[in-house]
Image (cartoon, rainbow, N blue to C red; front, side, top):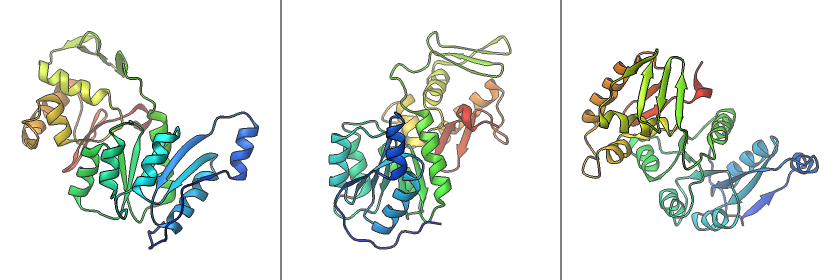
Length: 259
């Protein structure tokens, strides 16, 4: 397990481990991970784990430093600590989203639900609570890399077994038969399907589908999710399509997450 001890400050640096030099020599482009974390021992542990897997690591010990690196370099994933000194992680994330859609995995010692929801609403793609297992974090990084970059136009259709969702023409087929969805149900389904594997909070879904006045009506959203599941043949007890994250939101289960 990796635990976040109090660490000092360090200037931003780029790791070029031996394995990374080897990857470059073999002509493979290096995937770059930006770590924004003030805990030096934790940064060092992450640097070693990521570097051993042919990932280039860029380090920053403050939010301001992290934003400068994110603006100056091409990075594929950001690992962001919420408990940064000065500009905290949530503020850093908010500022990052002003100019970048790079995937962000939040690292936090805060296990309160509202902290996680706030980070996700601010634009985080995933979160890991400290102390965490390095292999779990690496698995989440791999999953994030598989899902990105997502084309702005998105997929025109999604298939899962006998379910076919035609996003361009906005109709759904199940076992060769049309599934009749309301306009709101279609909008909700489209929002989920075009963000596979990403945890979407109640507030995000409500505001995205119903508008800015509907940020807190989670019971309202729950009714529509239940209706969608029924019409799509999904089961909340053993979901294949829509996964509930209790008290937080919902995920459309990505293909690589399905057993």
